[in-house]
Image 1 (cartoon, rainbow, N blue to C red):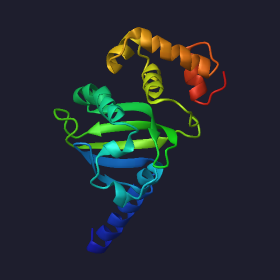
Image 2 (image 1 turned 30 degrees about the horizontal axis):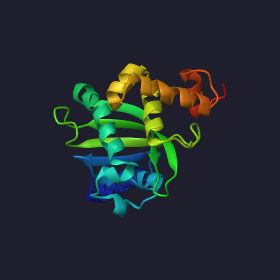
Image 3 (image 1 turned 180 degrees about the horizontal axis):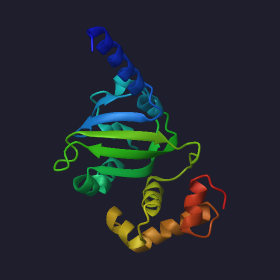
Image 4 (image 1 turned 180 degrees about the vertical axis):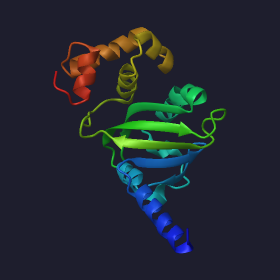
Length: 189
């Protein structure tokens, strides 16, 4: 390959990265080292505003930032990959659902270098007004965890989880968790 061909290929690679249909971000110890334009726009920032910043700036609270790391850490150690769906805040304070895929380069030290993709699920999961704890409970329910397991994850009692679950069912006028998740997913029940 000639130098001119290499330059063209590098330009095409950068174009594909910057405008991929999902947000892509590379982190080292949860510091943003590279991201595409799609990722920056998804959260309402410019790329320059995100580079070399802690991923913490993209979470509603420090607690959520810490909790989400702990949720996927074991999976990253075991398989090197982790996937979930979560509610994230945009810069303007609005919230959106996204599907997150995480791959670590170092399973023995999962946060050393990680690449993540963020797919915006706004079209299938409309933005909904939930408290931080409600978002956490819904995310764990979506993973199929029991109230006891969710309680352990969130350091609250299973009874408190049941209270949140009941309020969510009432809030969305559904009878069970399947109906709740369907409603949050934009699927009519």
